[in-house]
Length: 66
Ligand SMILES: [Zn+2]
Image (cartoon, rainbow, N blue to C red):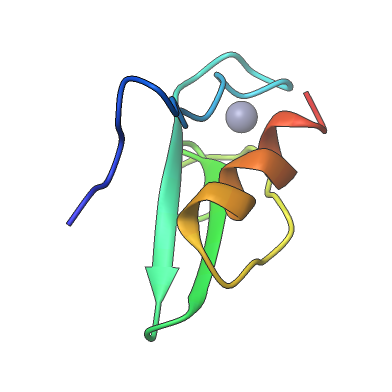
């Protein structure tokens, strides 16, 4: 499922607000975003990235807010 290659590392940074790991969320076939692993439901953090239509761009959106 994941297509991380050494030449193209796409890993979300830790949450800029609380420092917990971030996670990539996939909804449907072309909706991705990254949110804090302590995001509402699992905790109290409100950090969430913009939606994108692929995993790489979703991670990019997340990384630029940190
Ligand atoms: Zn957080």
